[in-house]
Image 1: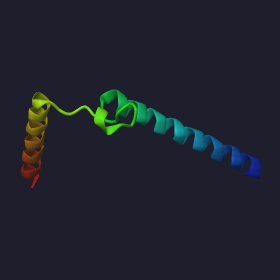
Image 2 (image 1 turned 90 degrees about the vertical axis):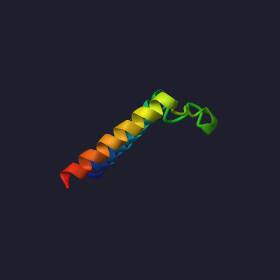
Image 3 (image 1 turned 90 degrees about the horizontal axis):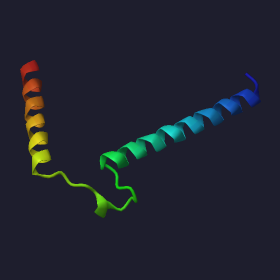
Image 4 (image 1 turned 180 degrees about the vertical axis):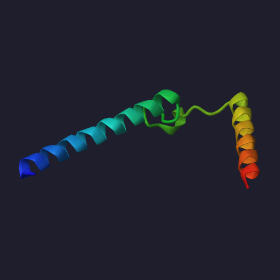
Length: 69
């Protein structure tokens, strides 16, 4: 592989990594995991219904782990 080919491949890898990072950041923003402006005051907190669902899912997961033992 020539130097030019290696450099070209590195450029493509770098661009691909940046695109993946941007898509991940956009996905987090759309799900409310990451605030759109980067300001943590904008974070969407889980309400009582979401908290109950997360607690229930956590308990079920814990039961499955214990059953596997």
